[in-house]
Image 1 (cartoon, rainbow, N blue to C red):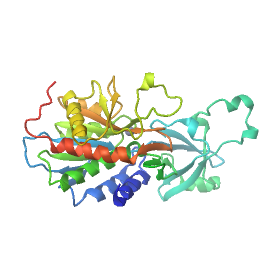
Image 2: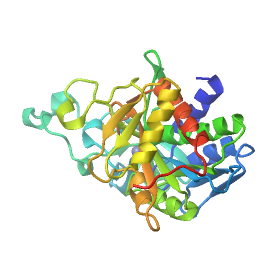
Image 3: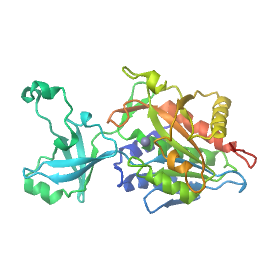
Image 4: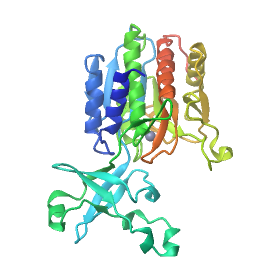
Length: 354
Ligand SMILES: [Zn+2]
């Protein structure tokens, strides 16, 4: 991966954008695509829409969407002693929180805090075996109660204070790869189409918001942009580490290539064309089974207006929704190449009828 592309990924992932407060990440995505895309706009919810016009109005238009929100926490109460209670923004696992450092995003900027936990010596034997529920956890920002009450407002969003690092051979580890990595892929595809001289199809790179609390930006973007094809770019569960049952969750390997979803939420012809694009490039891909409506932007997109042609392309991610998500940079790069090829191959004759 080129260093500038890596830096773009790092900036996008590290810039805090808890669900509902995505503007800082939207700004990073806009800055990257302004001057390259024909149009860049932000809608009322905060989703980024970057358009690269195609040469043939009859060719099917395509949107690739990665969501730019990340899971986080939200301050709900300051105790008389000055500790902050909080609720979850999205699917947060209370088991991994104790001991973490966090940023409380106040009006005056981020405030470093820690998730306090009693030392092991002071925890009763039976308490050690249980997960402390979210509402019993608290954030310590190291200030007096008066100072905390002055600086922290209930409703201030909170993110985990950890960045992105290279890991192993071609891997990265970070919080929030879900799914700013998807927005990175959608942006890189726009750049690659442009570098290839353009496509016949209109192409939108979508950085959607509020996916983690119900795929809300994906719903409004699919409706407003009205593309013929809407593909969600996401992370999926890698199942290549101990104690994951492949009989229940299938086989998705980090480094095994992008994962193409297969199931009722995915158009068969789009999947076939994705497979053809990967084969033509001699790049590996994997299949991931999605027996139900997926928990991705492809779900509301499929039901937008009178129904849309949708697909799901994912990158295998170990430890999703933890501060140590792990994905492969090679999987991401190959995903960009396959999706670019898929879009360049579209023309007015493309048929997605089922
Ligand atoms: Zn996601």
